[in-house]
Length: 289
Image (cartoon, rainbow, N blue to C red):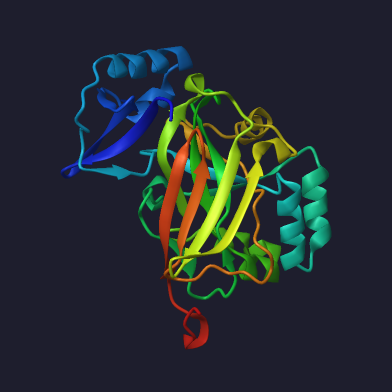
């Protein structure tokens, strides 16, 4: 894995650090500070920290790789995603239109304090009976809309809720523990801009219950195009993370369950691993299967 930027817990506070070749360097800035800078100046800060690296990790545990950044997401950016949304919905023509149109689907996903990191539990709604992970590449964008770095993301989704009515998408997508990111941010200058292979596995009782792969080469839209649309009428002084859609959608017979473990992997970005728990109250007193 190339040089990476990590958010670490240090007692009751947190700090950012770079990791490269087994050594750690403390960054004298927050992610919000870095994303407010021009890209070349942010790079200089990170490279200076790497130049003063030592062997000890300057923190006790990893945190999600955000501090003040909202998380937004793009939908229907892969053909498999379009087909999956049509499969779950009685409104299939809507997804054909979004897939083929100039304007993408972009929606708010999470406040920074709701994001969970590598090793933390992700959630499925207790009032939903059909739930899946969505393995995605996350673009970490600076205040100017430039790609500062990349991370892995999981846009947990209730297919049953969105399938009932597309207007229910916020409830299907936005709830506690519905967004996971990590394990770190790989700076854009330290890695090729893609395509990125993406692997998804769901483990159940120690066995592989689902596995699938895709590549960002299958996207119908480019990273820069999605970022440009996000910034057309929005400003992000502390930067923002944009999840870029999923090309791995399990078949209709599969649903994620509490107790499962979800693994999302891309060779250059590492592995994001999260156990699954139920979140919220079941509908009509009926617990999640």
